[in-house]
Image 1 (tube, rainbow over the protein chains, first blue to last red):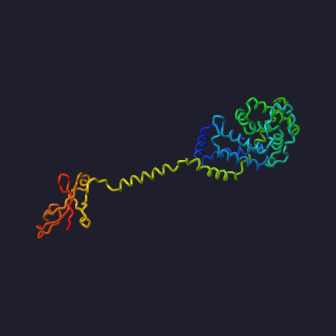
Image 2: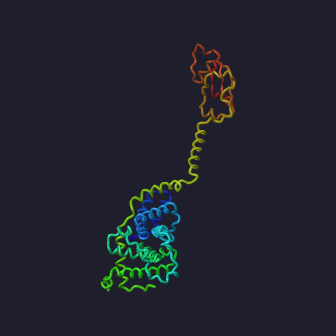
Image 3: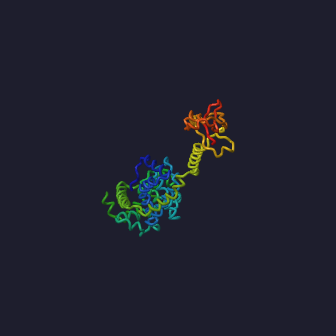
Length: 199
Length: 157
């Protein structure tokens, strides 16, 4: 997933124009970020319709509260992803509630009951490998899946992911490491010959 | 607890993740979202673009225009009577300026005096006089300056 360029100045100028009511500036910002927000919402919700709703709510939030974005704390893309992530998790209800790491000592067991085997996203993804990976990502514990989506699939920096998730960078690193290990464990039986091919 | 991945496993996982990223990169937000969002933006724009006291500048401009118009077109303040208050003058003709109007306008202490003089005097002010009536008296109102200089004249009959 490609994120917008890191040179913030042009984007901040667009944001300033948008705050003054410039429709062209808003349209430019929307078109620049809509797909990243939609894809992130798809990964959290697994449904195209829900992802569209989350995308719309995210940009309505942007329209009505643009002052909440603080350029000193990260890019606009990261902020929008954070809004979308919170809305998607809220829509998903208790299933996506953040889990206290202390309660997750036995986190090697995948949350198979959360695996959605036939979501609309599965139908959107044409490749067999992509579908398998998507299923495995959905099977991760929510707090691991959260960081994996933010850092690996939405390409937020560790600092941005930490800010979005409300945790420190060290926790982001450890959760990401564990998420990858759990994901590899989940994928191993689905690609039995792959490990031998790589090694 | 999960143990860290071995290098081979790490690479394998990256390859699988790349596959998912490539597939995701082909997905786009529905085009139908843009219209309602733009409408929403337009509906909030007036509150953003228009401050609460937006009516103040137009009101100040209108007041300024009205004031300037009144100053230009309103009656000139005069402290001297340019016309006689005598009721018999109501039907008389207009005053004929004998001096430039701008000078008459600024003349302080001008007064109107009803008088009678020979008709031949009109010729000195450039007015037409029939030779056969040159000796007849004429009744007129004269506007004099404070120094007694005739400024304007109005013939009464």
